[in-house]
Image (cartoon, rainbow, N blue to C red):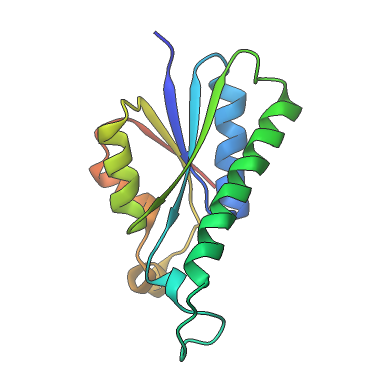
Length: 144
């Protein structure tokens, strides 16, 4: 049975490192990239003081663009003939949405990038990777 790997993508260098790790190590299975649009972040423009009705649509489009970039990277790596690559864009709180996707889609492994925050920044901002590690029902590989 082929392994189904989930790679959350936010466009950061760390998330691309996680994707590249998955491409290198899980050829022959299925890789799904998941971009989560946080509805709170998607509602405001460059200035926090005004509502931007198109911000959510732009956030969804960015998720689609990340999926296209992932396909290009996988094609460059030469794995598309042996590996199924799917890209998904969901809306919700990132850690919760990742875990729900795992539960609902028969995922065997998660490969996630870590931003490497520590101290006060980690406490104040939280850590999607840490929440996923603590609550995931499947193995998680964290790539920095």
